[in-house]
Image (tube, rainbow, N blue to C red; front, side):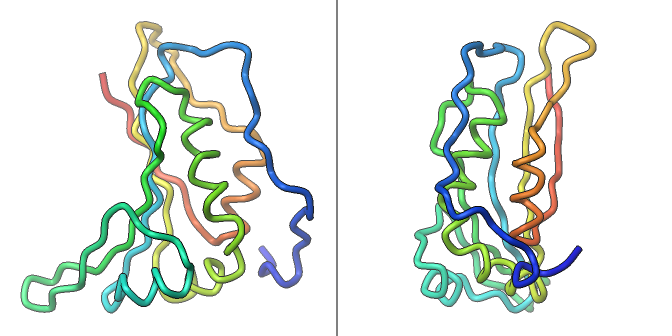
Length: 146
């Protein structure tokens, strides 16, 4: 996948799609996490100009990595897609910086989904979310719970 300098990000503001239907079985939450052995959350906050919801400094004594985290601000009953848009709207203005940081640190969207009563409960994300996730150099991870 080419870097963002070779991609064209649309100039128009990305609007969160408004769904006429909310599925109760698609609730959960989403976080964006950046982590690395030498990640200094203060440097990341200053570089991006975004206040994180949670941070930690690396600790060589116990081997823990530093991290910088953004949480969705929506209720856990909202569909996962809305949680992704909630975070992406804050990250897209600095997507080039994030792409550069993805060369050094692990960037990830982590989604925890509540399973519905239907055995075939599934998460469907539109292509635009997947494309924009690629623009910032992040990966997606999902976990389902009852």
